[in-house]
Amino acid sequence: MASFYLASFCIMVLSFSVTFASGNSVPNKSKETCINDATIVLSFGLYQNSCPEAEPIIYSWVERTVSQDPRMAASLLRLHFHDCFVNATFQGCDASVLLDDTPNFTGEKTAAPNLNSLRGFEVIDSIKADLELACPQTVSCADILAIAARDSVVLSGGWGWEVQMGRKDSLTASRKAANNNIPGPNSNVATLVSNFQNLGFSLQDMVTLSGAHTIGRARCSTFSSRLNGGSNSDMNLDFLQSLQQLCSVSDTNTTLANLDDMTPSTFDNQYYVNLLSGKGLLVSDQVLATGDDNTREIVQTYVDDPSAFFEDFKNSMLKMGSLAPPTGTTGEIRVNCRVVNQFNS
Picture 1 (cartoon, rainbow, N blue to C red):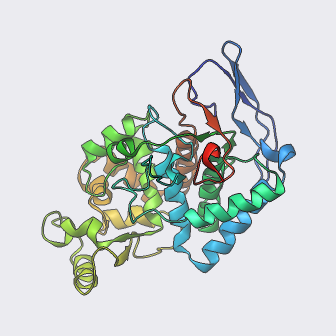
Picture 2 (picture 1 turned 90 degrees about the vertical axis):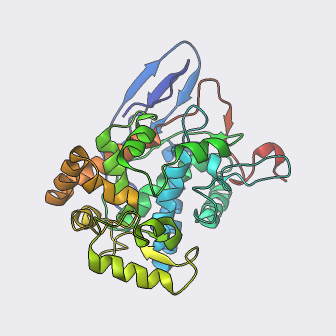
């Protein structure tokens, strides 16, 4: 799949036969697009020569972490999504979400969709530290996020895919863009379509990528409107009552519910089955089955054919992973994923 970088450069997708740590192999691919003289490389198997340990190191850390905390698979997948989904006019997939705030800089971690919600930063730190020992300043933090997201899906039972590599890490971040462009849990279909279309995604991409909620958990506060009569007319009654009981006895900002109450740690199509049963946890989940006939048709397709979901999810993840910073943006390979190299001590 060609890169989405729209600038004066050469995009080179190199020819490799990649076998990542899960054991799945992928066929050779080669494509090159050149514009003017500058060259930016976005490749399959980029680190095979420069850092052959890269993917095994990342996989090993993700495997170890997910075995200890199965929820971390969803958290790492979400980190990649929230990194890429900041409107490409501002950032794209460039590890901007990993930058810590400083006295003179406010990044994306404190944006409403991320604050007290995103997790897994320490896992990325550990992966990066090992990679810096194995091959200093070679593997970008943005590529780590993309590979860890893939590995999280594989380790949860989903299909793997070869990851394009060669992203650069940003020198800045945009809290405003994170607030404005990451879809909220109470979004209706029209809002979801708008958010996704702004990045070039189709209606099907939107429904497909929403399927990432087949793993993971959400705080009671993110679906409180469903519990208080605001948006629960389409909810399964037993499901509603179980959530009301869960969320009534403790702090709604800390209590967690499974996004998929049937197979919460398994990457499968159960998420879509739940939607047709009125058991979507978030408003933005359930509206896919009840708010629009076109999205419901896609949901039904994935209920009937799990392999269609796996294949489409792979393709949509590749598409999302290709979202790029704007033309002329300067990037680097950070030594510490939390801070740009200029200020790394």
